[in-house]
Length: 489
Length: 103
Image 1 (cartoon, rainbow over the protein chains, first blue to last red):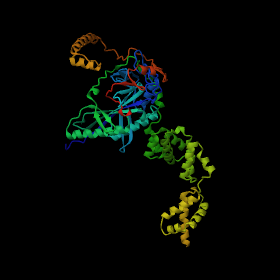
Image 2 (tube, chains in turn brown, green):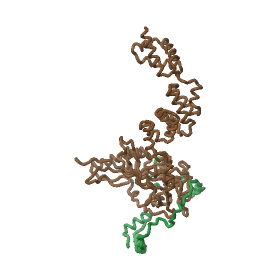
Image 3 (tube, rainbow over the protein chains, first blue to last red):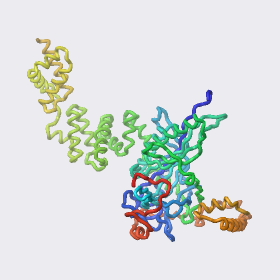
Image 4 (cartoon, rainbow over the protein chains, first blue to last red):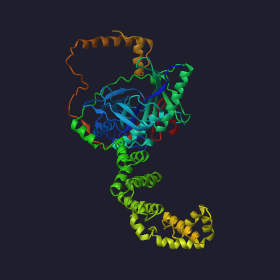
């Protein structure tokens, strides 16, 4: 193999995202997740004879916004098709999907922090379809249990070109896509609710004669429902394909399933992959024309996308890429941040506070920021007290926690409780003198060169003031007093 | 225009039909005749005809508002299932995307 170029992974993804509608794609059943089994069902989604589907206008709108979020070209005219296959979780015997003319063609998602370089992942197409029911295997009886609540829930399927070059990159793409979809308001993308599921296409390739590529046969791993599984399944496939090359054993183009527990993929039975979907235009649904005005209006509804916002946060507010990424990945945090800065907060302080205190609280409680009685203005006022040295960081955290619980303005809490930090030198100097007198040993140790002793003395000042002394200033004044004292002695 | 026995078998498979050799041969002959009559379509001049995806070719987008309407048939549906376990419909185990750990 000497002289041959190295093999590298080539990865493409198909992502199914549940759209944030109230009702299903083609009927009025609730699309809500988590309802008791088989409660959101009707003749349409159960495929009963004589029922007719009707297109959910909002699903179409969200699909268009989804396509815009990934830069796709929305088609002026499109139609639905039947994808025929027999599965118990699909009562009609076909899935209404799109094939010949999808909702949108083209687009790209740019990953800006991958291996310190930009990576462009091209989007091939976005189409609309309906979800199937959920089947669960009952270990007890050996049967399959069906719940049709999910059957007919609107999905956007996003298909990428095989542009990702490592499992980590595939994961980074998914994270970026999730942020995009959330910001665009297309889907809440709750992973635990199965609102994003992913199929991966994988092989190893290397350049061959001319401009061509040669590689192993493609593996398709189906129905991964967490970013971690996507990455792990791909890592497994990388080693499996590498080993096959090493051992000179041929691979076959096949569908595989991921076993989360064992951490391996395994081949689907050959019967399952003998697909012949016999797509044809859905006769029960009229074609759809997308009015250019509507498409434009919807495109305008898509707010600033994460990548642009991150860049702006870095440039305008001088944030590091970690902070910018962390804030922008949760739109409500980013909004809160911007408003706090507009109210006069220092951007870096605000970012630290929001990513520490605020996010910590939200993660711990599962609350949403909108549920909390705190405002960006409160945070800005509090941070300026800290910046001016009027209160310590610890005090700020205390009054903030109180504000989060009760909605009490943290600045008035500070005023009323007299928590204001003692930052005037005269008051502190008097206390410093007392502490030195009361702790002659420690004072002696420090002047003898033992830096550590100073920490103890600062602690004593803090104790006397019940934490209200400005610790930095106390440190300074102590140092000064001790130095003068030893000079006198 | 005769289909090969393999083609007929593949179509039967897709339709979930088990055909014995006699049925298969009869089906093959029937399908051949149907395809033969369909060949008439080959004579139509479609050079100037745009593809038509739906007979109701219209610009009036027919959609419905995103509103929840309860069908009220949930209980009736479960009651009519040949086999149920709690609120689930029970079917023989099939291979696919089932999530075994949820059970």
